[in-house]
Image 1 (cartoon, one colour):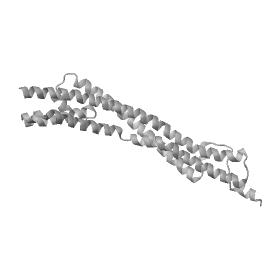
Image 2 (cartoon, helix red, strand yellow; image 1 turned 90 degrees about the horizontal axis):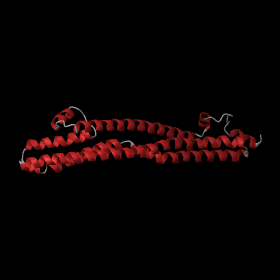
Image 3 (cartoon, one colour; image 1 turned 90 degrees about the vertical axis):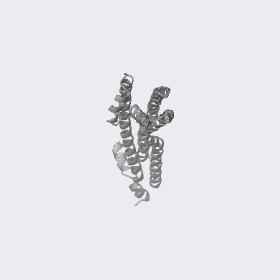
Image 4 (tube, helix red, strand yellow; image 1 turned 135 degrees about the vertical axis):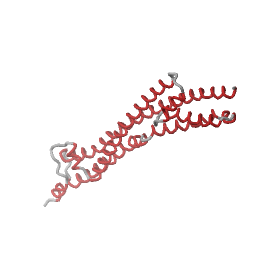
Length: 240
């Protein structure tokens, strides 16, 4: 048998249809593993996007409702009792932390306790804001990693697939388009899947990072305003 015929028979038998499914099954095992990993990363990315979208929407709505109640003139003690029976998030969590520290100091009743109350309240609100921010940022690092790594992982699969295709072409000594095209196509599919995973990840990461910064600014603004309110009450108690 002619050696060229033997090499030709070693090449994958490509069907005439170059569908994505066909290209996947005819790809090298390393390229297949790369594609499967990228598909998993894409699914994980979309799960995070959906979860964070709903979380930020719920939090923004809860903050709007809390601000409406807070500035409606309702008693702070009454609002504190209502929130104590729930697990508030956002501004509610900051308010609850500050009021808890306030009531502990009120129960102490000493002038010395009142003198340092403003600083303690600010610290507990800063801690509450930090916890809320960490909760909002959780998962965003995964999006960042997928956005930065997925194209290079897909490129690795492409390089590996093209390398194997060229070695098979060199062995068969056949450079016709019918032989070259399928191998190149299945290799480029890995890069395409990598981009499919990376593009939504980078867009979502940038959008969510800006959203978190906006929500954090709102929390810090509320903390400053509430700190000023409590500070005035401390001054009034010390002057009395």
